[in-house]
Image 1 (spheres, rainbow over the protein chains, first blue to last red):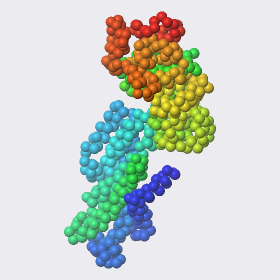
Image 2 (image 1 turned 45 degrees about the horizontal axis):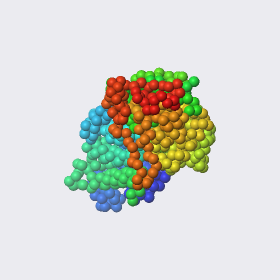
Image 3 (image 1 turned 135 degrees about the vertical axis):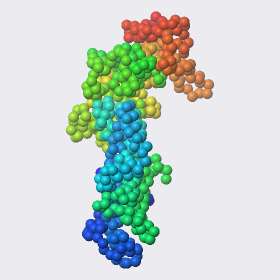
Image 4 (image 1 turned 90 degrees about the horizontal axis):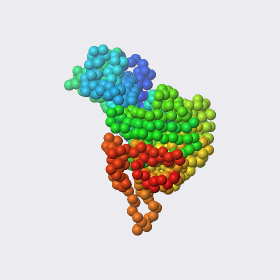
Length: 281
Length: 324
């Protein structure tokens, strides 16, 4: 706990970490306040349709084809984006870490089998696989989360495996065996904490990536129809691209800022967690 | 009962040539045995076999390892695990990698105690403190919360020793424990090991390639070459009057400690240790041996053991007939 707090402190002192954290906090605040500021929800038709941003002071960002205000859409959309992004990345992280750790530590045929499985997933174009899964099972948030996680874990698995492969040759692992620790305990309690730094860095990029995939799916009409996400607005905007490009631009800016803030945090984490880079400055 | 008895051990991969063969070795309680040899002669592999930690592709092919009369290869994993933690401790060469970088020193010591002794957190911490004091770490209380990178190499090695001693083992295996340390720290660690060994009446198997270190700490010396024992005996007897040409060569190859411009150059043993699959018939040392004769080519010498405990594997040992 103390370690996590000091990590946040160090992040805040890093220029891009600070910008990233401020942005991401703003987006978290948006999703938290959505229900309070806009109790009517994002679907109510509040004004005239296709209102350009700035045309009416009541709707600073304009309205969509059904006269729905875009600001609540952005607020509620932040919820969906963050939810899907974090849970998909979390699931990918858990699967990838477990697979990678087991493959790296046990080696032999276990490693071979798990790595061939990983290869199999990596040979299929990621986005296509996600589309296929959502297309077949049907668009709902859990399915979308699953579809994103299932293509994202192989990257983590490879990363963790490589690190575990290196660490398992260290004497402290032998030392743990001599003490009589079980293999599972050695892997998950002793070795994995040593790979945390790259995992954390990758996690931030993974969240950003998941948000993009979710929006892309929604843009193609494969979003959950019952929730308002940034992708939903993008999808509405797609049909109006020629006469109402603002409909695409508004959620796109939100997406760009979110993804950028996560990438900035990832960069900062990389610097903060890497002792060798710290000294270089 | 003999603490550790290795009998005619052969270790190697499945099909190809064994890496360690015909290895016989004993360590008594309260005795320090120095296991000496060049890189690649099978010293560390011997240690790993005793610990039951051989890499997957290697196996004990023949022979027995007995710890207090109990054969360890035949034990099921569970029992072996228990035995390792309780009766054996190991000190590694690199104190940097022998400790987990992300855990405090204290938690790494208490871990052992809690796993094996089932001590409560407080009792384990008290014992950890005791151990750190035992290995002479100053300000032990504060050091418990240190991470390994906050300590010097010598300190880290003391912590490794403390962990090895945590469960009061009867056998301690030290695999080149001072190779990674500088000379002054090395002397301190050696003194500490020797003292602990005497206090706790430990059997200590000390693996090294440094004859000077062996002379300081060991009671008996076992010289290995290309996977088997070539000479064995009391330290002073072997080092003062080596019988195997290899031992003699090792002794001659020691630096004599002079920095003068005219000082004699280091002697060396021509050639290198043959790889396991390239070991010749006959005596494995003959290609590098100044005394080799045709008999050495034809017939592999056996390890001849004198009643004094002195043993030599050579057809034409040096100083023949002189009692050790």
